[in-house]
Structure formats: structure tokens, C-alpha cells
Image 1 (cartoon, rainbow, N blue to C red):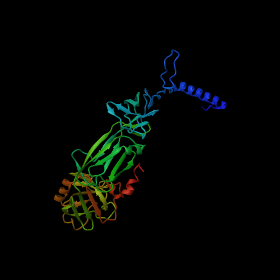
Image 2 (image 1 turned 120 degrees about the vertical axis):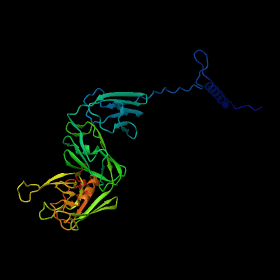
Image 3 (image 1 turned 135 degrees about the vertical axis):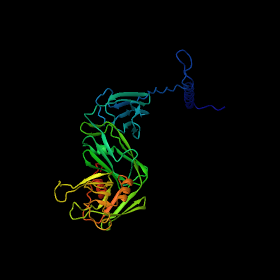
Length: 399
């Protein structure tokens, strides 16, 4: 039998003690009451987590505000979360608006109605918030009082402008012009030009495409037109564009041709201004027909009865083409028509043809005259086509 050396015995005892200690550590511990613990090895339980704070919502204008300016935007903002819903209403109508990219902010897109109560409600997670406010009554009211030509049932020519007149002077022209909308079934570029503080005119870059409906809307409710001046009512008008009717005349040749949708429908021998003075010279340029009158008194401008060259005559079937007294009208001087220019500036035509022109006229038809030394001014009647579209746009408040 082999006997271990004495120096090895303590080591064996130490190993046995270590094994016993490890066995005790790996077994389930006991509670003070003698039962086994429930943590499967005595590991510490994780600390309890706290719920994140609820999102906060801020609404502007603040609730209870009774003097909100109509051009102020409604802003709803969320912190600590994202907006799920935003609703802004007045009188059962919803106000349009949009969220930003991360849905932490919503901003209204349109002016508010003056003297109107609004309700705002918003939700972000479990947080809801609401606000009520009232817009102020404007010191001065802005309204559209006339749109020309926009008579119900009327068809207008392809050169027709849209002339809008307000009840008072506008100083914030950019804001008001942005609120004027023109929508055509057959769209074409166009622009507004201010011709006064209370009047603005829309003209297309090229003639309107024929046979369509154009809708004009002045969405000016709540729009600021100046200090204390706000729009109080929107307005919509339908404008019917009729046939493409264009008359062309070279005064030197004394024959006017009328084309209807590209087809020649009238060849009219005429007599134009005699040209002895500027006053008696027919203007060259692109005219628009403005009105048709039967009969109309024509009187020499700047003269009184008894003065040399004074006249006052009653004329039938007269179609106005400028504000300087120019018409296409009936005249019995058939001997001069197609032969000599003897008028005081108007276009004289055979009575039956002048009547045809009168009856088939659409306000805004084109009368393109050439061959004289006097040019039609762009602001003489509806001479708007005398300006290039580039020049026309310089009168817009929108750059």
C-alpha cells in the first residue's frame, strides 16, 4: 500500500472545504422562515421603469382671445410627442391646414373670417387640448363691387380682360392679388396689372382658347388690404369665352375682314379717319370691342356748337373699340367706302354690314388695325394688348 507524503494532506482538506462551499452557494437560499427563495440563484431583480411624461400641446391664438386679427394663422404645437389630430372649425366649416414633417406642428393655410368664433381641438397620444377664440371686426371692409365682363349668359371674345374693382383703395396689393384666382377649362398663362389703387386687370399672355368657361374667384375673406382693412366676402364669377372672332383692317386698303373661328365670314368695304389731324386719325393697334350701342349720339370732342368742325350726329349700330371715340358703325356714305378715308376717326361701314357686326359682336373681340401713324395707347379703352406680356406683368404686385 502506498502512503501519501505528509505535505499533501492539508491540500486535500482545502479542496474538500472549497467544494462544500461551492455546493452551498449553488443551492437555493432559505428565507428567514425556512423556505427557499424565488429568484433562482439569488440574482437581484431589475429596477422598476417609469412611464414617459405625456405630450404637451400648445395652441395659438390662446383660448378666450376676442381680438384676433383675421390674417393671423392658427398654430398648434406638441412637445414630447407628435400630433395625431387637429381640427379648427367656425360655423361648421373646417379650416384647412398642414402638419410639418415630424407632425409636431400644425399651421392653418387660409385667412380667418372677421367677427367669427373659432374652436380648436388637438390630440397627441393621450393628451387632448382645445381652445376657443374670436376674430375682431375690421375697422374697414374690403369688397369687390364690379367684375367686367361677367354678365350672366354673356359670351365674350378671346381677347377679353377680367377687370376687378374694389370698394376702396388697396395698399397691401400683394396680399389681395394672391387671393385672386383664375381657373380656365383650357388654361393659358396670364397676369394681373394694377391700374389704380382700387382696380386690377387680368390679361392672358395669348388670346383665350375659344369656347370654354373661365371661373374667377376673389377669395379675399380675411385678407388684409391695408391698415385695418380686411376682406369680408368672397366672390365667384363665371365668364363664358365664345368664338374666336377677329377683324383685321389695313386702313390704306380700306377693306376689313372678319373671321369666325378661323373662317372668313365678312368682307367689309370701309372708310376710316381722314388723317388730317391727330384727332381725325384712326389708331393702329390691337383693339377690343367694348360695347355695342344703337343708336348713339356722336359729338366732336373739345368743340361747342358754332365752332369750326363741330358736329353732333345720331349713329346706328355702333360698336365701340376705344375710349377716344372710335367705333365700327353704319354710315350711308357708301360712295367713300373702299375708296377714300373720310371719317373723323371711326370705321364707317355699309349699314347692313355694320348691323351684322353689331349683332355678332362679343365684348372682347379683336379688331386689329394697321396702316396709320397714330398708335393706340394701351390704356385707351381696352387697349391692353398693346403691351407685350413682359411689360404687362410689370404692373403686378407679385414679383
